Amino acid sequence: MYKRIQYNELKSRIAEPRDKIQVLSGPRQVGKSTLVKQVLQEIDLPYMFVSADNVDSDNTGWIGEMWSTARARMKASGVSEFLLVIDEVHKVDNWSEAVKKEWDDDTFHDVGLKLVILGSSRLLLKDGLTESLAGRYELIRMPHWSYGEMHEAFDMDLDHYIYFGGYPGGAKYIQDERRWRRYIKDSIVAPAIEQDVLKTKTVYKPALMKQLFELGCAYSGKELSLNKMVGQLQDAGNVTTLASYLTTLDESRLLCGLHKYASDNARKYNSVPKLVVYNTALFSVQSGMSYNKAFTEPKVWGRWVESAVGAYLLNNAEEYDYKLYYWREREDEVDFIIDSDSKLIAIEVKSGRRTDNEGLSEFKKRFNPDYSLVVGSGGVPLEEFLSWDLGRLIDE
Image (cartoon, rainbow, N blue to C red; front, side, top):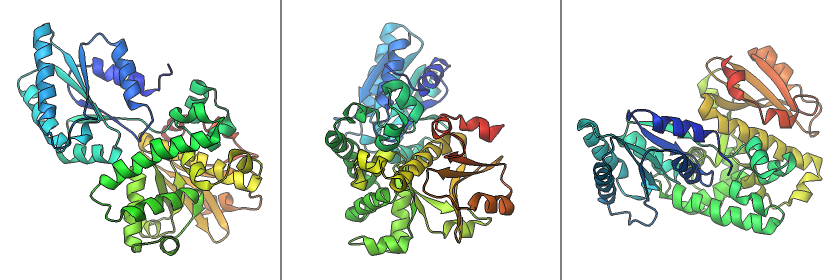
């Protein structure tokens, strides 16, 4: 079975002396539970794996009960270290307070009980971590699957990856596009929106959030002002509401509204957002266009290519600590701008849809980036770029 790069990171941290709670964080269906089970099969440390998936949310004592059971098993086995893994931990109300209590108690009494937690809702997991567990945990980030991973694990070629995206569970269905679409909508999109996003305290209009997600995915690779979004959505709230919901979708690693790059923050955050999906499968299922139709129309296919590059850059942003923007000034534009403490990088995606854009040249004159490059036609081959280690480009 294919092992993602985070496998070695988690295995290494578990082997270290007890110090921090290890948290696997990432969007739905990226293989968090699978990765943990792979690690458990390879370690010598005794462990206990439990899931809160079928636990009543108001059963606040469940975590304490599982913890007590783990302590008892550790004591009875006569071992000095034991590992407790709690899956879907966010489904228990006030889970972070219960974890904090038990963890601090073990720390005080020098109990060598290590802890790994994970959950399918990135938002609810994040809320609990920031509220109660500050300073007690380390994150292991699991983004959407890259082209290199999908190619190595499922022998998926570049064009199919660009359209069908990086959900490993859907790879076996791509020859039956109708079945693949049902899987993405029913097993990924619906739970992500209805069970994760809509359970956060910031969402007061569920129907509006769903419409915004669908509209935003369909517009991936395009700029769309919040005012125009209001005009296209039924039961629309105001611009502030939509901006808040778009931020929530971004935090869920589903859909991002990129800001325009500018020299001052006010101009950045008041700009028209450029919508980009975190996984091109989300664009494809909302586009209403089949793979064959999209692939054979160069201008249309260009949006998929740009979305694939954007998704790759978005999924690496948190790991390498950079911010992603776009840039436009009248007719001149640059598709993506990477802005980190050490580097400024301008990236233009070429797939035959534009030949007269002078955006890179104009951006270089104004901002003097460390690198300016074309990805695709006449530049870095797309397959090569999607396999780059961006950390080397940014940090060195």
